[in-house]
Image (cartoon, rainbow, N blue to C red; front, side, top):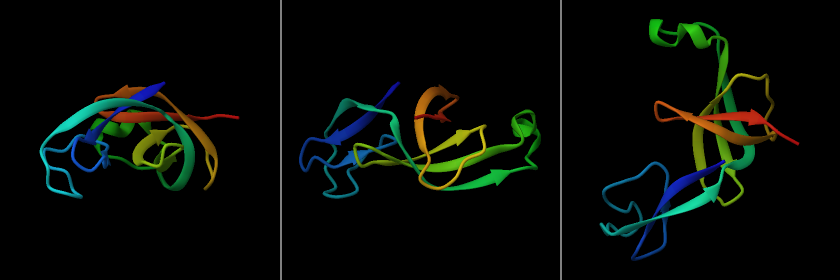
Amino acid sequence: MKLSVHVCEECGNTSVPARLICPSCRAVGFRIEEIEGTGSVYTFTKINISSVEFKHLTPYYVVLVDLISGERVTGRIKEEIQINDKVELVDIEEGAYIFRKCG
């Protein structure tokens, strides 16, 4: 699955999620590009006990994923994982990137 990134028209910096102002050059013009949602786990934490609204998801992992295109995004994964595991984006639920292990 692909995900949308905002690319600054001035300097080319990519932002995930979208921003109103480029964090690199402070410009306000962006274009949207699609990138592959595959990458590797940079770090993670396992959530065993959650607030009421996320209780139905436990246990789950919150992950930082280094995408193959260079961006780093936060997401969620249900499977047990380790640092450097290969993952792919499979869904976006209420703004959260949902990953699964791959290859």
